[in-house]
Amino acid sequence: MRHRTATILSAATLLLAACTMPAERTAMTVPYSPTLAEPEDRSLVNSIAVAAIEGGRETRPLSTSQVSNEDFQGALTDSLREHGLLAEGTAPSYILSARLIDLRQPVLGLSMTVRAGVEYELVDSVNGRPTLTRTVETSHTTAFREAFGADDRTRLATEGAIRENIRQFLAWLIRKPAPMT
Image 1 (cartoon, helix red, strand yellow):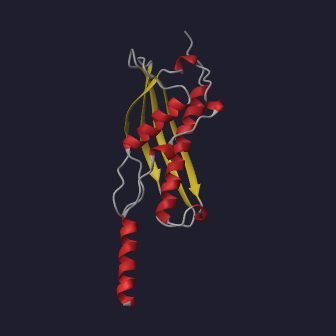
Image 2 (cartoon, rainbow, N blue to C red; image 1 turned 90 degrees about the vertical axis):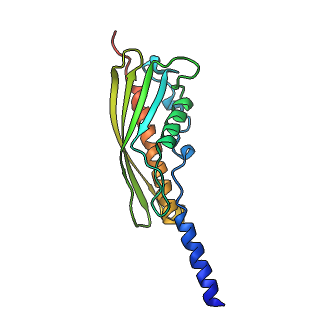
Image 3 (cartoon, rainbow, N blue to C red; image 1 turned 45 degrees about the horizontal axis):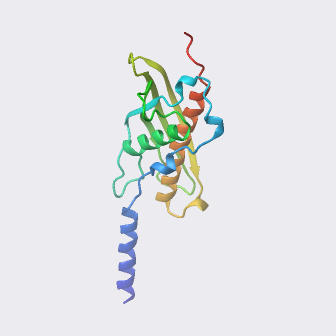
């Protein structure tokens, strides 16, 4: 009887381990912050659309939590909306694309630190010329006390690294002066 119970528990543990959760869109979204809501270049207000995102990967069973292109695009779009930069109901003046170029995740550890690198490019929607490009590199650590499972700590650290990456890009974008005319 004990052997059978131990076998069932082992099988249940393996099934739970196989259910790695992907990074969640809402957890990667930068919540509204007044310091990010007043861009120096007022032409950015309600004027940016998000193009397709590249470099993300789907999370597969028995792998680490990943960031899908769709969820990263959603988090970036939601973050722009939260800060009054997303073009909604009007034609965008700018198209923002992003490419996830680096996502370094630990394999083992008590505290999990994830590093994310993203290339952003803002293109004028009328003439198709890039108006700015920026590569942002960030990291986020999730301590052991924040989540028991290593997969959960990795997912939380991944979400935090992407959220911080978007936040740093927005902080840089709102400080960008208006182009000289």
